[in-house]
Length: 429
Ligand SMILES: Cc1ncc(COP(=O)(O)O)c(C=O)c1O
Image 1 (cartoon, rainbow, N blue to C red):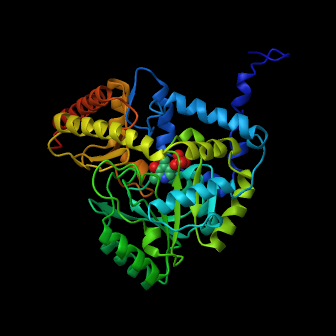
Image 2: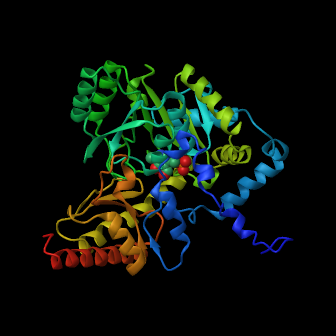
């Protein structure tokens, strides 16, 4: 395209002097680290690529008749109000429904103790915005949620990772870390944790560790941010109490969740339960960002929860995901090298696989995309300190079993070719 003077208008998007902007960016924009996951999202659009990188829930299984019925109810009963601004804290009817939903899972939170957010992502951002000044310490699992990386870097947090094992964050190592910091006269502002079906770790924190974490954080006076998008997405085993429940209203936990995995991420609706003074600050933060979450989505969810049993839909999803997880695990057995290890999640959407140390999954990804048309999230995307170089996150919710199996076979072939290369160079196994 050209403008009236014949100059290419497309060229206008590429500034002649990029440094003109670079020099003016705020420190928080300069230091922001992308979520590799988001960068990879565009790959899922390419038809030739099998992407096990995203975290897409299965939205195909949402019944068309339910969708139509709920929209009809929104349109006939709430047309004008659902097109209108709403309160920053969210529609009262939605907060009442969330309060009820949490109560069914053993959690006490009154509607006025809740803030509706634009997805769980905004809930994380509001928590960081409310508490973190540049250089403040945030404890996070290692690995941590890749989508939290741009948030943590935006607020210039100093992130200390505590390793995960099959039972969740190691509380022994956390305690040692808190001791070390105390000797230096330092204390973290927050402990950010994903106790259920960790993204990307695929593990669940044991009950004993949950109890220890809540007790330790209370003893050391450090606030916990509990991020729980996947609690109901459990296909095996018994549900465990949330940290919010174990804290028993003592004010030690800020609880975040979302409708993204139990209903649909396109709604962009999540929530925060927090002590009143925290909620007030987060509400002000949200006012500054977007005034209120989408009223249309909130109304859809209210009408949906009123008419249908959301647990039935989640049970359907869980059946689908369990089969897909099993397909992924079987394919890993078949196609990954003997030295590789991986988690076996009881719920959620992800498996975390670790390869021999000499395989860098960032390099592997480049090879996998280019030569094998398959994508995953490289492990480094889940750390802020460069760890995770030989690990990867694999998603199983977003593709059918046969596609998952083919995707893993392709990654296996890419790994094999890297091992061969390593051998030829005289290194590796
Ligand atoms: C651990 C974790 N927190 C937060 C989110 C963001 O949720 P939402 O899509 O509701 O913004 C996700 C999404 O994948 C997640 O895995």
